Image 1 (tube, helix red, strand yellow):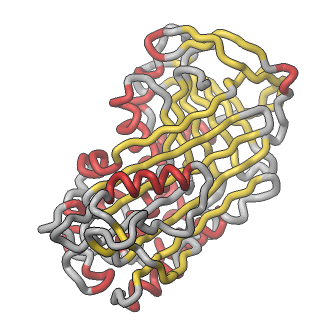
Image 2 (tube, one colour):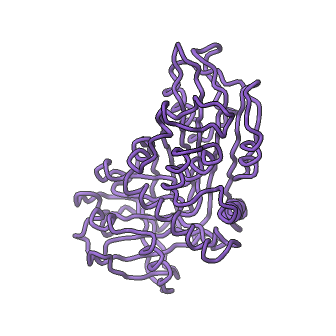
Image 3 (tube, helix red, strand yellow):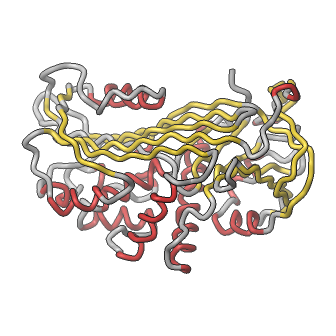
Length: 394
């Protein structure tokens, strides 16, 4: 087996039904954000495995746009490349989120977004109406006691969500903490799909796999002889790559594999040249071929600091208590986000793929200030996961 590979889990035609040019533009913007997120998340990890959900960034930022004003709103629109206040954009994205929940036979995708509100907390009727019509959202009352250790508690809550536990909302672990969170925006999704042509576990065997820095490892390698979409291409720097698309049952979702053709070419030389336009050219140029397919069986789970990435992208006001402008949420001017985390897991096996993620954006509480907690978690949209596979999981 050749060197490490990047895999992209794709939803086909998920922007179906919108205006032609706008639909294509939004698809490219979503893809570009996904690649940018992958590159920034993978860079500091020095070749270790990475699984991410671009929608864990884009969906919360879209929802925050409904309440953001001034420079805060402009920064969110700039990093996304669009604004949900545009009627045409809103129409196309609503159609896309509806499509996610109807992705076809053999694929189960659950997406829900809930605004938990502390009793007595005033909310803008316009804000409530907007998010209630966005990505299967709803508003529910909740008791959101939050101690001063908000950061660790939110991370623990995200860990429970990623493990499949459903605690019924991000409530505090202690009854009268340092402050009282007024609202929590929580979006969750799980993904499960079966290969259109399953791998047989009888054909899985340990084979060498070249990871980061040329390290060769023995990993469980799945095998099948199959009709697939395949192509060989050259990136802008002249590196030769092989691209393989494996469809799931129903053909609305597929796994795209990008692998350096030369076993001596590290993946790190390919990754910086990945762009939305290049991926579009590659995927639209694939041709049917019958071939031997080897794919590692793997499980990946990790988390990373979302705040540092968003800051580097120019989203700074959102995290600044003196500059954040989220008055559109309730008319108050003391809402901001102090931290942002992202956690995800994915498992690829002979049967298919299972995945789930959670992201959290929240404000820390303290003994002297009231805590306004805004945990947000979200999942898959257009390019769903970018995986950097460099070593087997155990």
